[in-house]
Image 1 (cartoon, helix red, strand yellow):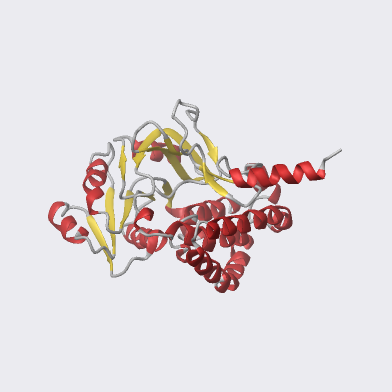
Image 2: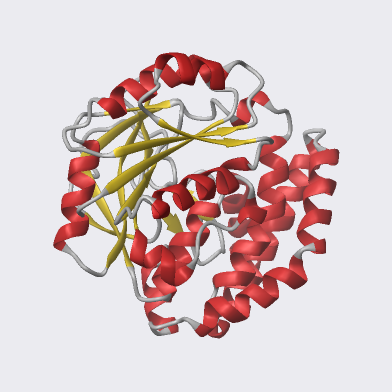
Length: 336
């Protein structure tokens, strides 16, 4: 990679920006740092101009979410003729060799379009993500999240998807499959782009020697109901856009059990407004997503069986309610 850029989306993250940017300025290879100022109201822009004048700043007048924000930064990176673009959360801190290790993997493997690092929580003991997985229930999840890091994910390997919080993306791949889906705003847009990459024949690699420390949920926790709204809105789009036709019914049966289980669970917790809002927006934009499905599936260069083979054939580790539902169903189905 002759030229690499790092895109940092920022929304009201002034308190975290200093540590984040200092770690990026201390990287062991040269790179361009682009901060996307995403409509902050906490003085972030003034702080950046005063304290980090050497860093590129892209200013959005309003919050375009993670997807829209990083797309703004990626477009600037394309103008600068970058060969690869790394995304980085404003509430994270990178090891000095984080970017170097990702670039080395990408340079060594021409078909690798995305490289994911080992993301640790800010306590430096527990995992945040070692690559993301997509299950045959139509549910994505970050591999290893909240597990104690005892080197159980110490081997470089291929994974289904990469967390947008600190991963590296090949520009030629982005030009082929497109940028992040801005309708997602936040949550699962990184799995969506990884899914599209896999369908188009690109691979996603995990490199454990590339390490980042992330404060989980620092941004989403600022908005009550935000996670619920985005989850209910985005999960169906992820499913309908990307799952190959051969497996729509097989995965869909499980997915809709899981999806409506999430809905009922959120309502029982008093989150009826974000649930209804998320369901409505998802439904309204579904025709657009089905049209996009046609484009995504038309680019498919691998077999449906390959996509099936790289999925996780189980529920996500933290899906306790769904595991209970599955256990009851199996008991009824296989009773003597």
